[in-house]
Length: 563
Ligand code: GLC
Ligand code: CA
Image (cartoon, rainbow, N blue to C red; front, top):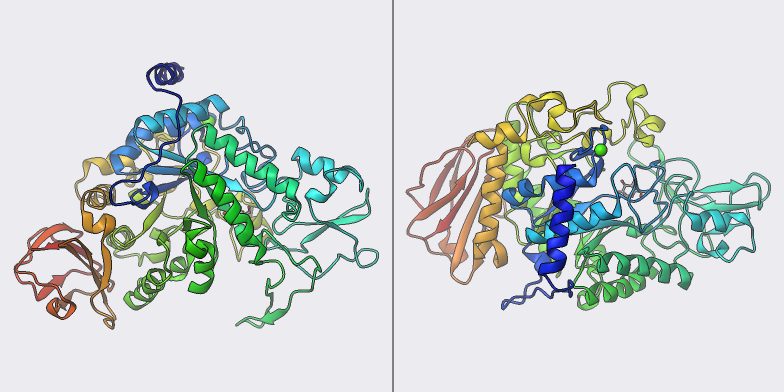
């Protein structure tokens, strides 16, 4: 309650002290956009901090942790869906785009979060579930009510191919057919995901208008941009051509989403949505599952007219600590012509600690991966809790699974609960997330891996992240520098220089489990250095004395300025 009052007071103060938030255009002399220098952090609101002790994280919980995020070096937070929702897909089934799920709080709480963020020079990005709504959204309820309802065409309704047969062979990505029969109107509706997530018909201009207006509504409330959910799936072939199936490595037939994924019409919508965003200096981030750089290029659009930040998930496909693999992915992102967007994990992907850990050097590897993607040219998007070394805590029994796909595919796929566990704040009960049992169990390692304990330990993962983010914000080479690869064919070490106007910072990452001696020939790459100034080292603290050899401990990251 006291915090709530403080929040209201803060809002009042803001209203009196500052003129109406005219949209600020933040382009500095170097002509970079605000999001190019920002570090983003994805927050899963249900799991971040519970302010009212009902076991479920909420908006006021997030507001109460803004000082921590600022301390860490986060500039923008992206909240996964916090809108009213039946929670079949934990918020990715939205039943009202212009409100807040009562479990998470109120619109006032959102206003407060935005105002408090602005005070700290931080921005709030929302998740825009653009491909589909919940089947409980009033638009869908109307659409389903009769074939002649004015909203009928807001969704994709088709006749089946005879009794019991859907219109075509498309499957939903969460399993089963992509069509659900509605006996009342004797037609089928299309759903790329769960049946409770009917796809909007983006060929209908009224849908586009209504959805674009949603973004305006939030921009006016102070939201600084959107992460666009499932953009690949926005359009489907109007002729409903059957998709081809091919056998995978295990001989299983797998659908190739040729007619229901990445249709060219997506780009028209993105260009128009971008024009709206530009009016508010907002950023559009895309959940873009591209499989090659050509597809990625298309999402930036000609002359960068579409997404400023299409996420590059190709990096997340690297499933082992491997210098050649990461080098290849970086080169690819560098060749896209757009501003790279680096993501290592999220609420759909196993946590970094888990994916890359070898059981022996896990903390070192966590620091190594951070040193990689937080020192590259581009904008990183972190996932809450990676900065303290949170790992997946997967359900042990099917009865405990909350994510529907985990129940459908158990035990092959245990679902995504494991990467969505409560943030670990303290060594106290429920990791300081809540006074009561949280909705999703806390990872048992929380007594050691939590904010409070790690803040006090200078060698913790948390303090390492903080130092990295500090460098990112203060060193021109990290903010604006080129990426120059140093060793194209080293199997163990990934090394590069970030270079900007005479400042050159060397990053050397030992991606092997053994100690390494790295011989470097800076002159061959056009750099000269008499000495190194160590900026950060994840294992040793000492200054390197020679500029042609660096010794590294297993999985060590070494960052130094060339002098
Ligand atoms: C995106 C979200 C995922 C959700 C799906 C359907 O992939 O990241 O969590 O289940 O869209 O909305
Ligand atoms: Ca709560």
